[in-house]
Length: 250
Image (tube, rainbow, N blue to C red):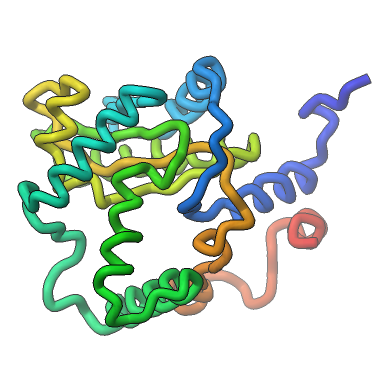
């Protein structure tokens, strides 16, 4: 007899969800195995349970595979090499030191795993271009949002994307969210027939990761809770249900 979710203890559920959250990571090399349409549809349906302000559900997503994905990738690469898209502006200048330090650490870990030196601009450009090939993933996604909406609706879009990544990882499917697509809105909008009121927010690669690839080896560090959160008003060293917490953290 199969075990239903109703047979799971709260600690079992916490342990399972925690493992999926910890194992999700940005994957930048994929195996060629395709993902079925029904599977991708189910993942999107689960992602759509994300919360949104007043339930306006502002997310839009264009999902490509096969020849349409290859055609979009080719157009993006051509635009990049022709420098016809505006330069990326992912971060402000000057970037505050605390964030710049993390950005530099990210670059050192990623390019170090690939054997690309800091001043090897050709090697770095070649790796950056792989973004536009969706890192060889069988499925590429482009997320857009109505440009008239305010910042809190962009947060809702992010919650949808996070739901999608977690739903995928729970099935052993890997993803990589990619802001590198944002400057290529005109190219993307033309290919996917995006309405004029929408703007490209970011893209995502999805598929079964090549876990032996060097680029997938680094694990990016995370700050301690004590470094980014202030917990106020709690009794010291207490939890609401110690037995559940202890079991979940094993």
